[in-house]
Image 1: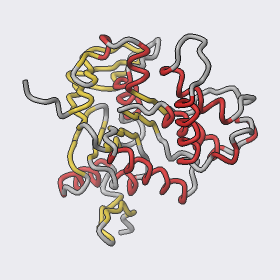
Image 2: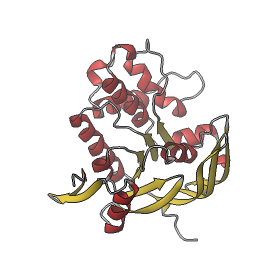
Image 3: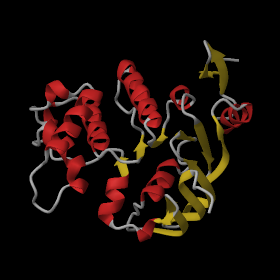
Length: 262
């Protein structure tokens, strides 16, 4: 049997919310130990696709097709096993504002802990590492409600990192972050990939998306391009899906998405 080279695979995925078909005939393979950015216009289905790959389904949502995680159907994983393997950072996640930052990040260790078992030395080490990675260690005793939106986002990212999962799915992880901390996120994602983690992010910041290894471009619920970020075909598709109001240009060996002024 050949070795599986993808972490997530989606086949004939269809998602409907009420009367609206959000995703149509999605076939997609996410390469293992790579960073993949999912981009597209508002309403293209980016967040819905990411949630489907995480096994998250809204109550009013109908879905068909198959999602494989490491070659196994997602529904064949136990909740605990899946939570250890796949970490999630979503938009506007609800967390009690009176919890300390440290305790919020410790929530990421729950999949590794026994029922009512105290946190282990490995748990505390993982939490400290995640807080330092996101430059949030100094707030560890503060309550989440005392933080700004950007600071809160860094804590929630730390919670996802603390899982130490093999797959990390993030929906708009750069929301509310200032430019230096957006750069920190990019460097953290790159480091995780070098350690063998598969990172998939929905991004609106197209120049950061172009720093990923691969890009999935959605439009109107369909994948119109999946390829390397350095591929000219990816650049053409990216420009086209945004009505040629942007242009992809190279600067100092990196690709940037710039507004087209003429």
